[in-house]
Image 1 (cartoon, one colour):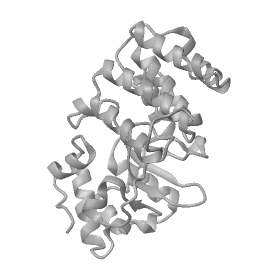
Image 2 (cartoon, one colour):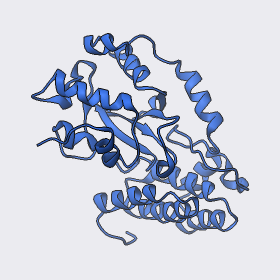
Image 3 (cartoon, one colour):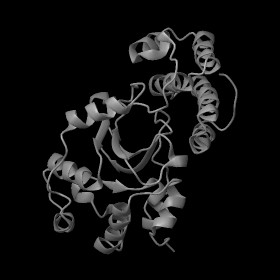
Image 4 (cartoon, helix red, strand yellow):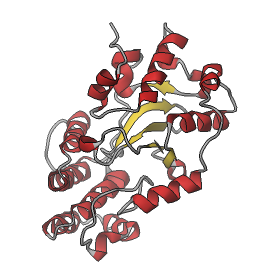
Length: 272
């Protein structure tokens, strides 16, 4: 039997308090399509899933793929030749109390489509309707399909909040820190990763932690995961950096997410 979509139950599923509008969304999916609520928004090309499976049914498979950062919490996918994943972007879920929140999109082979797409569920669905060319009567009645936020303005706003800009185009928010120059810019980190020197990448990340810059180590881990995360030993190295950085930043939920994804994709430690 499906769980009741209350604020408390959804918070347990995601690990942090979701917006009240998200409860309305899940309840609406159940009412709109009681036989297959996960497909309630199929007209927009959207399938709900991930943490929503206990509430809506559908596929029990996680929506996470190896390249996703722990800060991205997917709840829907638009299938196709290149799937687009949509989810909440939450930098510090352990201390999140329902305030400012972004909704992002990740498409692993379509980096130009990645980034934040809205700051509200209303704006998110307005964008989906604009992109699909379809309308959803129930969402229109709620006033959720009226106007999508300008993407360039959203990205600019996210950049202004981010201490580091990351390859997944989502950015990273951490407290101010003495960032090592070699890791400060995403292009510097990309060059380091492209050389594929395992020890040099590990030492750069660990040195950042030692000088009090866990955000720099985290940005390196995020970029490493994005470019090479589908490979066992690089994912393991990213996990090591995640663990050190999140421990220093006191973000235990993100540590658990990273460890769970390691176990789910690879099942054991060991450099291969």
